[in-house]
Length: 169
Length: 108
Image (cartoon, rainbow over all chains, first blue to last red; front, side, top):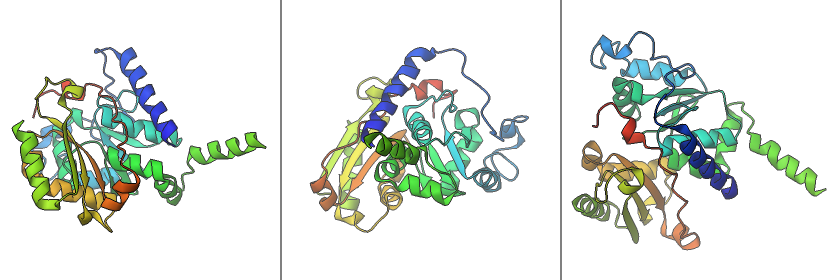
């Protein structure tokens, strides 16, 4: 498992090297807050993009929801990238990712909602699971495979394990 | 630096750790040395016994509530019981920075 994690860090390094400063991708899959300037509706209260109701809708919209800096295609923070890489290792490519750098109201709102001071934040089945450190722990001790299974998601690592066993035969 | 000292004092008081490392990782995130914006802490404490990783991290956050509301921008946490630390005194490698703070429209 730890070998896979080291590979993930190297991938991150390669991505950063090839990235360049310009051309940050502005569209992310199913972000939900991008339409028509959600922040302009007024200070994060009531119908604002940072309200409890708005955040609740976002975390319940999909079994796997991530609040991060940047996008899965182009993470803008090493910790956010770690979350993306770990999900990728497990073959989880279909999830909702929200770029908090695009929306200061959402950024504050998500911190209030989870009572957690930092980004990235990972939600499984609408429930806050933790940040990058916790996801890494779950990945290393096998908990993530189990949690994904509960959501009906089969981790790619299970298939990788099976292939390895077949090679041995 | 002063923030590192404050972090150490608060964690000592709240968690009475048997082992505590407070590392200013700001230089790894594009800041100048001594910027004191990004920290990593390794906290070994009996208080963590029986608590999930999430609960442990929340304890650390609670102890550092003031700092996290202020200059402390990012906090990496390793939280283990003394037994866990004895059997595994190693810390996972830190992910490389991708310049996150530089992409913010305004610094908070």
